[in-house]
Amino acid sequence: MRWGLVVGLLAGLVWYGEARAGTYDVYGCLLPDGEPVPAHGWGPSTQWPGTYAYDGCASLAGLTAGMDAAATTSHATYSAWIFDAPSDTTISSYALNHTSQTAGPGTGVPSGGRNHWLFHDAPVTDFPESRYVQNACVWAMGCRGLGEPLQPLAPVNRIERSGLQIRRIIDALQCDSATVCGPTDPASVTVWASRIGLADPYPPAFSSAPSGPLVAGGGAVEGERSVMFRAEDRGGGIASVAFVVDGAKLEEQAADRTAKSCARPYTSTVPCPLAVEKIVTFDTNQIANGPHEIAVAITDAGGNRTVSAPINVKVHNPGAANGAHASRFARLDAWFETRSTRHRDSATLPYARTRAIVGTLVDEAGAPINDAVLDVSAVAARPGASTRSLGQVATDVAGRFRYLPRAGSSRKLTIGYRAFHLDTAPSATATLNLSVRAGVALNVRPRRVSSRGRIAFSGRLRGGPGRAGTQVVIYALGGARSRIPVATVRANAKGQFHYRYRFRNSAPGVTYRFRAVMHSQASYPYATGNSRDVTVRIR
Image 1 (tube, rainbow, N blue to C red):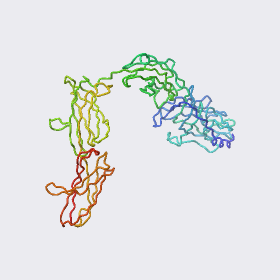
Image 2 (cartoon, rainbow, N blue to C red):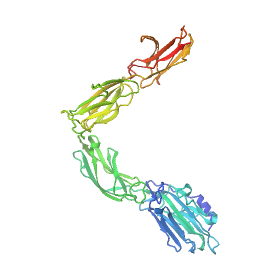
Image 3 (cartoon, rainbow, N blue to C red):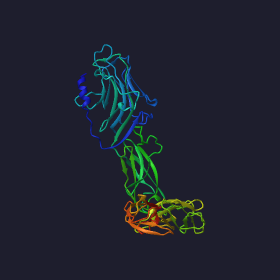
Image 4 (cartoon, rainbow, N blue to C red):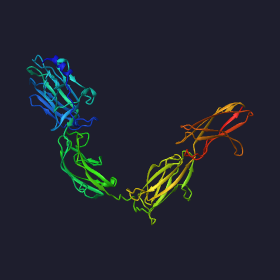
């Protein structure tokens, strides 16, 4: 054999353009996490005397092919594991973890040997085209084996190809002598794990168009409605079915819940059923009342999707009742939780504090409405603020509820109850006003100065929004709760403010106290709040 040409062959392998088709991956022998799986799609080739192959995937031993060390084999004899693409698919990519051990030509044979070859489509060493051989370990070129068999998933054992359009992969141990390969050392090749990407160019097709109560047309539909259809596929099989409403896919489900192989990661070459006859149900309560276009979509294992012709329907649902004894004449009461028995719908809290809201929901006869979902929203106490949804809270068996809003600015909170889920407006509401005092921080430096010394105030409004431009007054505090304004400053967007002050002629030993106050302002959603006092002593 002309070994010099083999070097050129391996350096100039040709990759073919990737086909425009859906693809799906099939794993064999080991998953990436090391879990053993069957090697579907792989088959042995051992028709020559002295060759063997065994499937050890279940026992973590891989797919091994080889030749008996003591046997004499003829020229071009090979033992291999072969992966064949199923009907209507081609191999577009693969990743193999494989290892091998080669051997010399044997007793009385001057050249050749038992060598490892990885072929595409056919065991042919066509030097001009280089389209078949992808990898080789040739004994005469000094290669005694590939990879590390004690670490099956190690990167050194991995070979990957993409952009293919082939039908077969052959991982073989081949006798490459010009005459025969005589008795020699043991030689074998092992495939430990494989990921084969299969191109599936054929989308599934409806053999019987969807029909039934949902798509019958001619009138309004409500509640749950079903459709029935038959479908077929060529390639990987039909994986899922979904409804398409106004162009959006909804409620995707397995085409055949009993087909356990039709779940990723796929370990079967045809993982999903090639034909299905199915009845699927759609709950129209999950979409808005009014006209819609509804179709059925089927998707195969490769991701190819076919959508049936859309049908115009009109949905008219009252919606599910919101709670037991749901009533549009319900009465909703809510108040801030306190130790007092008096119910208050307003509260003032320190900065960064919150208080729970409690209440009851009853029908017109006073019976509790339990298991109802109430909507909670809020509007910040500043001009132009928009309503913001905070979430939902449910009533218990006695129609009671408790909701703890997050700490924040002053705001108006609204609890709303819609008797039926498709009602566009609440049947009952309760409104509460929560005032939060501004959080103000103040510092002064230095803390000890001369009688004509200078001091610098710095501070911050702790909460937002609306801090930019908010006025803060710095006061000097005297006895009997008297306070003298020192300066009015404005905060920046981060809430920071600064001011410098110089004493004129203060007596030594005097201590001054200062406090920063944010008086309530329309643009800043907080109630009046002040800082802790800071002191400066005259030396």
